[in-house]
Image (cartoon, rainbow, N blue to C red; front, side, top):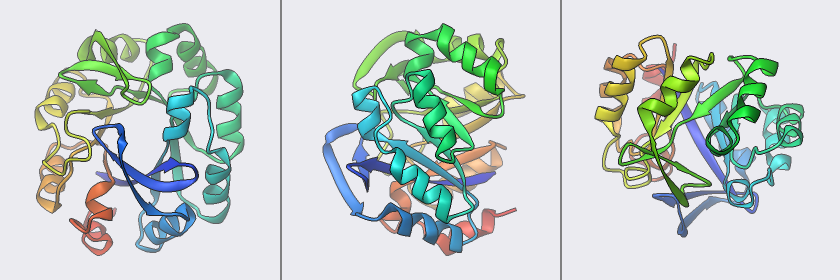
Length: 239
């Protein structure tokens, strides 16, 4: 199981929100590159980079931070937040992202998302399936939908999606444990999917339970920043 540390960006700084609420923001580091380099120095190879300004503005905003981190580290970066147009997508890839996560776009403009999947391939495009009470949430989680997460994922798996990042919005940033049932259900329904869990990790026990589920990866954010898990502890999962 890949341990994928997260850096969420607002105004170019590394922050974390609680349950996606922009009013519950905590800044951790004004220089995200330093954070990324610490992850790399610890032996981690991947990074989940989220443009929270972009998610709100519906266009990529913090592309310069992506370009800096990609240029100064060897991390495999998946980038999400605000990728709403062909121009956004080109910018993100040109700035060094290896994968791009599309969530809102896959809900609101499925024809565009499907075109990206066809054009760039299933190794480059990740489906973002963020859910609140098993219903898809979009636009930085500020909008709820009536789309059932399992129907949403199934539709795109049939169209060739191989990677899915799923966050249970109700769990994110609370350090109360991940949504094990959600991931178990997704695993059971889509056994060939590269499923990446996100949100709620509170410590090593959560990570060990997720590892036992044979997930492709897990995104860890607040648990690192709040000292619930150390980078040294995470090294036990390194392949």
